[in-house]
Amino acid sequence: MGTVILYSIIVLAGIAAIFAVIIYFVGEKFKVLEDPRIDEIQDVLPGANCGGCGKAGCRAFAEALVKANSFEGLFCPVGGNDLNKAIGPILGIVAVEKDPEIAVVRCAGTKVKAPAKVEFDGPNTCLFAHMLYQGESGCSFGCFGLGDCVVSCQFDAIQIDETTGLPVVNEKCCACGACVKACPRSIIELRKKGPKDRRIFVSCVNKEKGGPAKKNCEVACIGCSKCVKVCKFDAITITNNLAYIDFNKCKLCRKCTTECPTGAIWELNFPERKPKAEQESSAEVKTEA
Image (cartoon, rainbow, N blue to C red):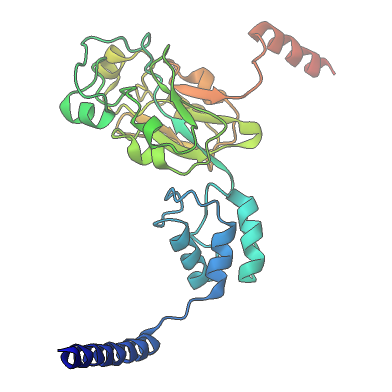
C-alpha cells in the first residue's frame, strides 16, 4: 500500500514538473516586454483613474503616451500642464502647453426664472427624470437639479445650489469631463477658463422657438440673432434657434451680453461695468484730450 502511494506521489510530481517546464517555455516564447517608461510615467500620474484623458485609467494613459511618444491627442486634465512638464523628460520630448479648461453649466433656469408647473415624485436621478418627462418648469432642455453631475465628480468640484436648484462649479474643477458625461441633457460643457478666469457663454441649450422657450424660462435664448450682429469676431452662431459662442474666437469684448434681450448670455469674473452716465463722461474726456 505504501509503495502505491509513493509511486503516485512520484508520478504526480513528474507530471507537475513537466507542466512547469512547458509553462516556463510558453511564457518565454510569448512574453511581452514592457517599456520601463510606462512605470515611470504611471508613478508621476495622479492616480485618479477618472477617465478624463479618454483612456481606461492612468495605466492605459501611460501606455498610450509611450506608444505614441507624443502628447498629441493625449492630456491628463487632473495633472494639467505641470504633469506634462514632468512627463516630457521621461519621453524625451518637449512638453505641450494646453489652455486650462473648466466645466460650465449652460442653464440659467433657476426656481425663480423657470418656476415649476408640476411636481416630480420619483427616483431622485436626472437620468430617470429625463426619460420620464420634460421637467417641472416645462422646459424639455433645462436642468433637473437632481445631482447626477455631483455624484459623478470625484473632486467635489460641483454642488447643487439649494436656492437656485442649479449646479455650481467651483475652483476644484479639473475638467475631467465626468459631469459632462453624467448629464442626460448635455447642459454641462468644458470651456477654456479664459484669462483671469473670465468667460462668456450662452447659458441655455433650449432649441425651441422664442415663444415656447420664453414661456417656460424667462432667461431662455430666443435665437433673435442680436448677439450675432454685434459680434465683430464671428464668434457667435445660431443653430436650431439657439446661439452658441465659440470660445476659441471670442475676444471677451462683452458686447453680446448687453445686447441679449433675455439675459441668456453670461459673463463671469469680469469687473463691474461702469454706469452708462459715467461711461459717457469718460468718453467725453478722452475726446477732449
